[in-house]
Image 1 (cartoon, helix red, strand yellow):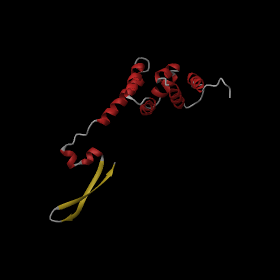
Image 2 (cartoon, one colour):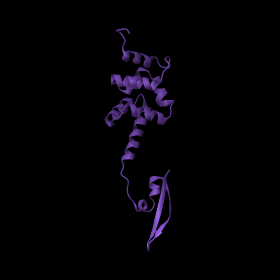
Image 3 (tube, helix red, strand yellow):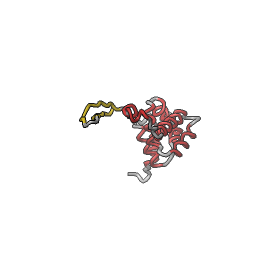
Image 4 (cartoon, one colour):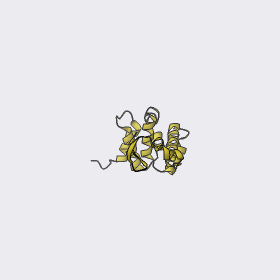
Length: 147
């Protein structure tokens, strides 16, 4: 191995030459970002065909999963979104969608009367009931399955 070998330089060369170098570009980008600490916006400026590949030509779900692996914290997402707004608008839009999805997951569930009478609506489960025993009171067995 040559003493001039640099994994970072090699990754940078692959990024700049993509798609002439046939690789899984998502893996190369993740490796490059992990080794250098550079932001996704820097990588996209090195080769805007990567933007098309990941954020225009693929499904929104695939692009969001990729973004989740690139940036984990809210401050990092905010920074990347600001950096990409003008040049790479799909990145900013998808980051906004991710933040909205995460906020919805954190919203507390409001317990209503319906929760206590029919929890299957809230949890998307199917319930059936049948008598279990009668000791002067009617007890019911409830069987539920996840949807």
